[in-house]
Length: 368
Image (cartoon, rainbow, N blue to C red):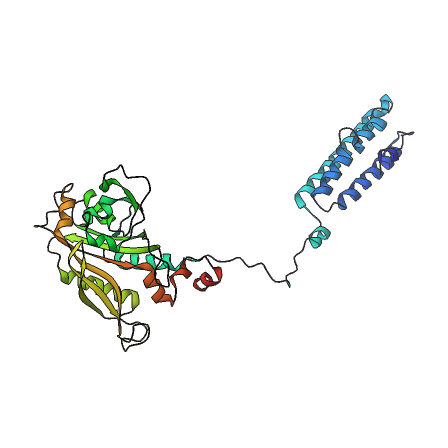
């Protein structure tokens, strides 16, 4: 039905009005039943309720306004009924939405392969850092953090690496350019270890201190199977009265067993680090052969894993400049450090450190 299809009324008795309005109501119901989506709902509204060319507008003009005075009341009542019917049909169609036919057209074929949503997972390095942190958190250690861009003072001098000390050569440093006019101790560099956080922590709080320091470090090392210019360290510091080397050995032995299994053994060899005295390298029994000897442990049955030692009194002397409680005559402590990549490579059977930084999803997908 269009506007042109609406006839002019020639009779205004009840029978004629019932017939005319009944035909229009039937057409409205038929149009509403054919609605199959949001666009059809809007088309129905414009067709019937449009302000300029809607069918109700046309019926009002031809039937209501053109009717004689004595017939306007019955025509008006029937027009109100028709208008309420059309508005009700429109509201019902908007709420119920598309018909069964429309839903069938939008149905999903459940026999087709689904779209897989990838599940995220921790990177092997992140997982290893978190695992080490949990081990020491269970021993009462808190997590220490500090900047990756450090001053020469905190990275070297306060850690007992004075200017010109040969131990500086073992940590080939990436420095920030254009700082020649600054005093050496104020020059900026990318930290070569997380040890500066030890000094920053001691300066900010008196003993006792028990912290674990996971973080990224930088050295100007050539890339190969086991070295990278960017890597991660986990260092620990424990300072209190009457801390001994036995406390250090017990702590690290427990940590290695927690990380690699209760059957792992540890042993300590004398070594040298400027910020600890005495110092030691820590080896664990080979986790691949159980200490019997294999290619990975070079048939020795042992794998060197980390360094440690008792905090050098000279380091406490630097801390005492801001925190007098760090009197080396009254307190003692130990420190240790390990590489997160080395432990991750051992735990997950990774042969080259570069795989951890390549971003290859085929490799990283193994750890989901």
